[in-house]
Length: 414
Ligand SMILES: Cc1ncc(COP(=O)(O)O)c(C=O)c1O
Image (cartoon, rainbow, N blue to C red; front, side):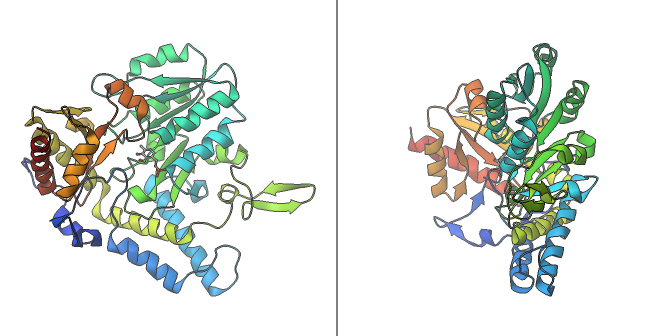
C-alpha cells in the first residue's frame, strides 16, 4: 500500500480473530468489502455471547435468583460500556434499542410528535441514510412541521452557507444529521451543526451508526442531544443498538413503546412510567446481544478507535488512488483526508449490480444499490453506485483484488 509510514494497525493479525475469513468463496479467499452494511464478528465477541448463554442466561431485572442476577449484571455492565464509549454523563441515559433506526424513531415519535407543529422546521441533510430521513419526514408530515434538507456541494459535503436561509423560513426545532455518511464516507461537521441547533433552541440528533465503529464518538464534545448507534456495524451482534439522550429531555418525553418492564405501576385507572432508562425499554431486553455489544466495545477499545480511524483513512486514500488508475471508473465523495473508509464508484456503462455479481465470483463482496440514500443518488444523478467499505480487518491486498476484479468486469461487458 502506498503509505510512507507503518500502518496504524496490524490488520493481517486482527483478521485471525474473525472466523469468517477461514472460508473460501467461489474457491477464492473472502475479500469482505461491505463492512458499512454490517461488520464481521471477532471470536472474542462470539465467545462472550456463548458464555453468557451457557453460564448466565435468565431473564433480567425481575428475578432474585443467581442466574437472573448474573444476567442483569451482564446487561448493566454492557450499558456502562456503551456509556464509556460515548463519554455519556450517565448510564441512565443509554437506552438499548434494536438498532440505530429504532433509536431515531424513538426520538422522532416520543419527542417529535407532541412538540412539532405548523411553523416549526425539521432539518436533515441530503446525505442522510433513510433511517435519519424518513422518520423525520414522516413526523413532520404528521404534525404539520416543515421539512428541509441541507444540500451537498460537488464534493459531497454539506453546504453550511444555507443554514441562515433555512432558519429564516421557520422555527428550527430539530437538526438531524449523520456523523459519517454511509454512502460517500463524508465526515460531517456535527459539532457546528449542534452549535447551530443550540443557537436556535432546537435539538440535535446525531446518527452515529457509521461513525461509532470507526472513530471516537463523544456526545459531550459533539454537543448533541441524542445519538444513535447499531452494534452490528461495530463487531457486535445484530438485534441491538443504543440511543443516548440527555436525561432532562428523556425525563420529560412520553414513552415510545409500552408494555412490560417500562412501568412503575399499572391499574385500571392508569399507568405510570418507570425510571430511566427502563421507561424506554419495554419488554424483554436483548440480553445476550447486549453482552455481545459490550464485548465488541472492549475489542474495538483494545485495538484503539484512533488507530482504526487512521488505518481506514489510509485504506480510503489507497483505494481512491487505485481507482483513479481506471479512467472508466467514476468515484464520488470528498478527498480521502475528509472521509472515512468508504468508497462509492460506478463503472462506465455497467450496472452496479452486474459489477457486484462479477466481483462475487472473485470472492469479493461489495454492495451495489442506493445504500438507503435515494435523495443522495438523485443528487449524484445515478440510480445506484457500487460501494467498497473497509474495516480493521481489511488488508490492502483486497483493494488490489478489487481493482483486478474491475478489469475483469470491464472485459466481461466489453
Ligand atoms: C449512516 C447510517 N445510519 C443509519 C443506519 C441504519 O442502521 P440500522 O439498519 O442498524 O438501524 C445505517 C445503516 O446502514 C447507516 O449507515
